[in-house]
Image 1 (cartoon, rainbow, N blue to C red):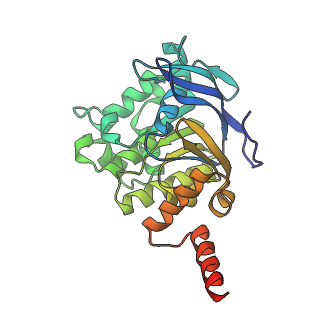
Image 2 (cartoon, rainbow, N blue to C red; image 1 turned 135 degrees about the horizontal axis):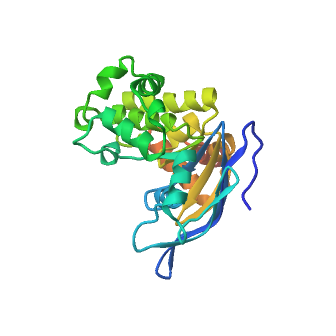
Length: 287
């Protein structure tokens, strides 16, 4: 069972013994965790550790040639991870949870305007015509920081930057009134200004709307900025979990410590462990 960390939200995404296989090889090794509304759960690890595959499986998007087992519950409702993953269950996921990915351009059809994407998204989720109009679209775009929504609705995806498209993806999620957002390396390819804008937006939505977020990244600075609790993933397994403070200041697993060491060195800083080693060396020299 996943570790419980007290907070003010409620358990919304509950994952138990989730495994993904390529033939007999386990790519994700029976992981269990929960993520809650009103807070950000960080999932961090190096590239190839299984983070994105975990996200895809939670969304019912198991890549072709792979199989999965375990259980995923959204708001208490069981969602098949592989067998029995029907159009109906995929639609049920889509009404409760949305995903934004590293390359937002791949999520849009380049021959359709943003207006057409908004209309199609609501239609696909069964919204009546009376609720699928420009007023609702404008409100959603304004909420993610576009001061002139009408000008955005007229654009094609290729006319927009990556940061703008990520915000449009979030606007589409708000349009569906989802309770939970999977952000899979959503800021990795963005410049610093666009990254900050998207992260600020996610933070605001968590505080103001009670949105739950699973923030998947290899960047510990993003985790430090936004996450309430952290899951550390390595080689398909969750090797450590805890609050941001405990992960950064008192890592228990050697892999977590090595991630932090690499992070500090990348930014020209000295880690707590390195600082202790320096003090120990200085003490030995004095003796």
